Amino acid sequence: METLIQSPIKFTDNAINEIKRLVAEDGFDTTQKLRIGVKGGGCSGLTYVLGFDQQLPEDEVYDADGLEFVMNPSHQLYLFGMQVDWHDGLNSRGFTFTNPNASKTCGCGTSFSV
Image 1: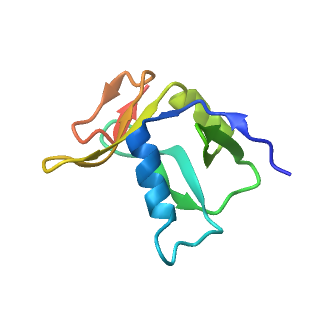
Image 2: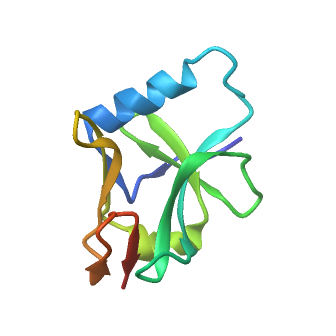
């Protein structure tokens, strides 16, 4: 049995609603979990990962206001306190990340350094 851990990341209501909408789409692979993390690369050194993936043995399962996601616990150092939002406007559409740990971010908002 999995133990849900209190989330180190906050999601806005808009982000939660969009993720739930994606999961409810016809043909969604229900074996996949929402994954949040970081990977090397991008113009500032690290890039955010937000997508659906298979759960790995080293992953921890987190709960953010009823939204379950997986993350490698070593990524928490970079993401603790981050807020994920969803914008659905004419000029801006997509997920945005507000990370208090980032010392520098790039113009696209998907890359950062600590």
